[in-house]
Image (cartoon, rainbow over all chains, first blue to last red; front, side):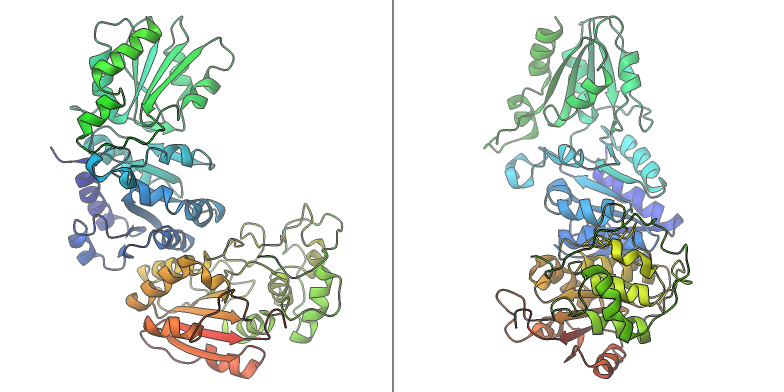
Length: 297
Length: 250
């Protein structure tokens, strides 16, 4: 199976062929994959080199002239490093862009902390108006990318990962999907967390929701899934608790409980594999089962 | 960084629609009076007016943009990156009819569109919001790329920066890339009032020249010299004009 990043490159190349408003801005990452598209569209596939402030600034400038920019690099260098550019060169100018990241929180554990961005979604939460997609499968990534590219001048963050689920779900932007129904609480799995959540909740009487879009947060979908019990576990592939406030807001008029699971805040100074890191974070199926069953049991 | 010492006048609450009353166009001699509507002083420090001549010559003789063409896709674009001390900029916009001089006394007040840093969503004629330094040049690079990608090879993109603002590393990302990409519709005006803490050994222009830009360094008070530098041909290369004025703390 291809990766989400492979699919991003192939889909964007196709979109460039059909929508003259689109332009891709790169900072060396994935530039080789975009070489054929750059040959066809030399003015709309722009590699600024390893210059991430310019990556976002140039995207803002493109948008000021009416283009729809898609800017891409690793999450660490797309959101964290040029964060003020994201705030000012897009939001404050009143223009939009599609930011497409790769590597997420733990995709390259041997690369260490410098290439891990578990705080990206939390950072974007400090800014108004961002849509945040966290697909769990290349098919979902493609659908959400096509939606984002056509989404007017919206500010859209598409968070891609090498970690993915075995099967795609028919995601629709902004709506949670019900994957399993039960009566003993709700577990919301975000993006690549779904397979582990399904394994972890096997045999438990809980509802499992799936989110490939976390901002806006589908508060109505969460409330509709509650049944008689307003106990919610969030399982996110980035900083633990990032969506806690959204869940609390959705349930503000109810007595409720929320447990936020995800990547811990503490630096984890180990290398190794994705599987080893997920186990260490308690995000593999056994770790999730213990914590979910303990909370909802 | 702070703006020059000014005392904004608090006044009434004008609406934000700067075009509601068509202002008459004014000349260079009117600019001190227009600035005084914001500063409350007839005489201004060199720092407060460091951009005044450079802005005036651009808007009066070079930029192909007017209140009537402000929405045209083939207009020239001027991006004020050095958003500190925007009184000269607002005065020029008022003199050229982009905004009503009646708005100027509201400078900095709650309902005014005119902040101590410009906001493009509030100021008629402002292409970008600025204030945090080092954002205009990258935005200008993207604007030049966007126009080129749309086949609009005629409109020019101008951005005004300051010599101290040039400290910000984002400028250097943009200068190197724009030179390599040969963005020949991109133009920089660098106002040099010797305010960079560590200076620029060898001059600011050298930073642009090294990256393949065309450059000119002129007296930033000499209108003919500014005009000549602004209109010098620079085929295939972006162009930087360093406008030297009195040192900020002289």
